[in-house]
Length: 215
Image (cartoon, rainbow, N blue to C red; front, side):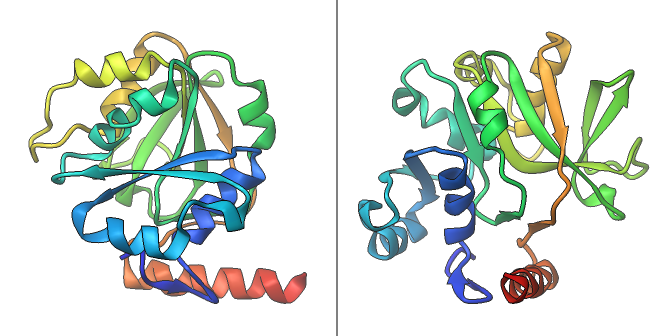
């Protein structure tokens, strides 16, 4: 998946660039065994991008939350920003990263096909629930693949129970912060693409192409 090109670059470059734009210089890439060598060959130490890259292998498909749990030593009790490798963002989140102190923060985007994503329900400017791929969404605000957590996230992950598909779900992590009343959010203004399908991959390529042509 992450070998695919989005316009003129491999897909993985875009989420890494989002982190770089946010001032993040130390980045861990968590990947399955089949992708690790490709990323290492493509990106190396990260020096050409001005960052330091670390690699971790997720031995089996255990869910996004399990992958995040592998970064506990890397995080070293500091807040951690996580971005999914097939998500492309136009917005710069540097202000959110710099101002973050505790709890969690997610980034929402208004979409027309909310049933494909985790969906946030908001009441009085607070998130009161997040539902994963609901048949009848309670809002049009999709939870994108970009998150900021404090160090308590790793304890939350350790206490998670696998979902029906046998994975540790990031939605369960987010709802733990919702229940604690410590989940913040921002609504993205620029384009966002989850390039996990061929259709969305094509759309992402068109968006990046149009953006480059404007610059």
